[in-house]
Length: 194
Image (cartoon, rainbow, N blue to C red; front, side, top):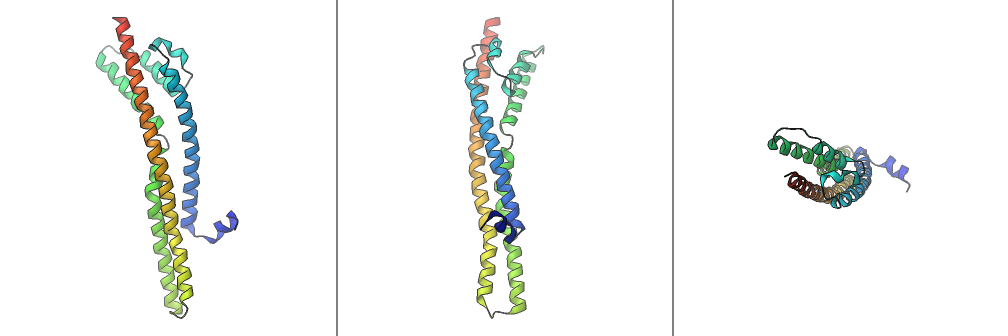
């Protein structure tokens, strides 16, 4: 059976879940690329001894955040710390980009599958009401088709949840490493000024 034939014989629920799964896989590829780039930037950041070595970092969100922190011209330590906190929050948002959507798919996929199942069961019982219980094979085929929606919803949910939790963990780890190194660099910078 070709993909086109599969697409034509299944209902709207399977189509929606299929599209959602394709979008999830596209986002997964994007996240793998983002993590590989972020890993390289973290390696460059680890080699930095102070904030003046910012030229060692290639352009990107990490370098932009550090440049904004270095160029901050606030008059108090409280404003400086607030600025650092905002930059860390922005970096965390950057790392979590697309992850929330994958989590949303993981939560909604079983519900969409169940909606399709309920609609399908409604149609099966409507057919039974019209034709009676003379041919149980018709009912069995109808129920089999209906359960495909539930199964598809669960499969999409499990796949999405695995990626969601994995990416959430990786993003949190990268943000923690960036935050840790950033505070070390800031401490070294303040120590060298004193």
